[in-house]
Length: 194
Image 1: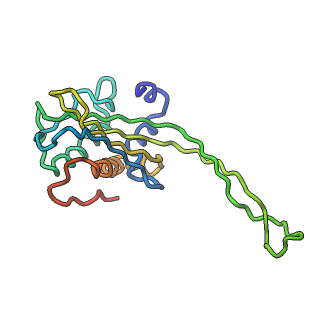
Image 2: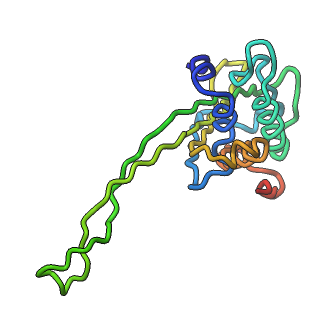
């Protein structure tokens, strides 16, 4: 599915979907799933899959580079160390989708007739909004068991600000997702600057 997204949407939409969440006009939604049978204190190191789902066919993408840096900050703030043969391996997935939303809003009109005591009454007006929604998933896998132990995701609108500030938006998105990670930061870390 990712391959079809890469060929279907222009590069800027893909960049925006990676970042989607950080600089959204409306608050993004974050989701988290954790394997409740896993004791996260057993893990000390992390690393990334050699070929990430966000990479291009023959090279590391800008999105992957920014995601790796942001996730490294989050994992290290929780006491994990980067390693070549890690206890946990991390991968990223990005998806974007064009959306249409219709809504009815009250509209003022000029009807005063016999309802004059109610003021102006005009009915409703239908508004159509088009936007692109992006989803970023972060998967954390135990390579020994080859099982997903935690998944975090964030979904939100892709704005022009996101497209123009990719690295900052990715930092904000990863920060928001990691607020639900099973291991909390060792020290309080400030939210990324906007």
